[in-house]
Image (cartoon, rainbow, N blue to C red; front, top):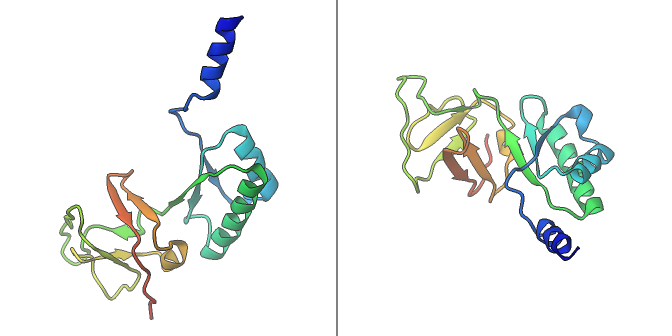
Length: 155
């Protein structure tokens, strides 16, 4: 009996190495559904810009915050962009843009600009509304990591 209790205590404090990530969409983003997912063990949610407009993302985020409040659990959030949203190849020259750790790069939705070492073109005009300063952007499955420093108004 004593061995069982020690084992059980260790299991309660055990940190899971595997994480459960659920993709939220229009049909899976209500507060009750998200609460159910969190209670089932979801560690993070992924939001896809392919299927959700910026206004939908706001609603989903409000629902997620409410579900986290109800369950008293914090859940990670990932925003998935379409593959064609960020361009690391200059369309005018087909030259691959090489970045170094610590480089400061602007991401623009202004198609008058071309991707280069200082600026990356984003084909998603809603992108500035989807991110906030401090957000971490994982590109190419986390091989490139950006931190949003600020957002400038696009005219």
